[in-house]
Image (cartoon, rainbow, N blue to C red; front, side):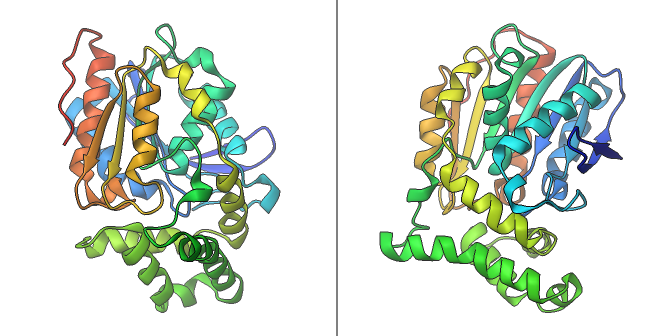
Length: 306
């Protein structure tokens, strides 16, 4: 289905499950991807909980099948406003569990910043999964390289992808995705990634316009929302990260977990940045656990990190 935002942007939205389900799980994807990156989790959550839950996925503005946007609109602030609208329109009642991967997690933090009443002990949000994401300081990430080299490469990657998007059609890049495949294998995913998951990551990059490559990169370098985590006090939070995540390294996940009392931190050994693909069962388990806790609000023991 299509949702038109207040500023006139069409967002591609997919909802699975009954409209009167007591709980909606909302999944926000990462930069240069689309809602298909949450495909494993959408199936697993519905498979585990059936009609007790509905799952809402969508393509961020400037991504996938949603409207293309000019660079000035490519900000986390715009994404957070979109998420707030989607909740108002497609999940206006009932409890919520939010899952955010990378920029999707930053979008959840942006929502907490602009609508803190949704969170907290009395809010509708009863669980949050922050997957391979950050509260800020992304301008210091060196991609596992010496600082000077890492800084140069970090800025160069979106420029390379944007240049290819401007010079070549999507069909041409799908036929010869050598650059996108190299970035997916060496930067986005850990070693041993399944070919189907590499293709999903590559397709996400190919389907992302140049304006979103450059605009969101600049905004991510300014992203600073650790203070927004105070709104999550009293909400079950599970932070997950791959031990080989080069874009949002484990220390970023640790800062998120430390900022929320009682938050659980899971570090997936050997995994890269695309945890919903690389460790699909782990991420699904976290979402199902949060959803079960939301459906049955009793004391649940915290599991030891993996």
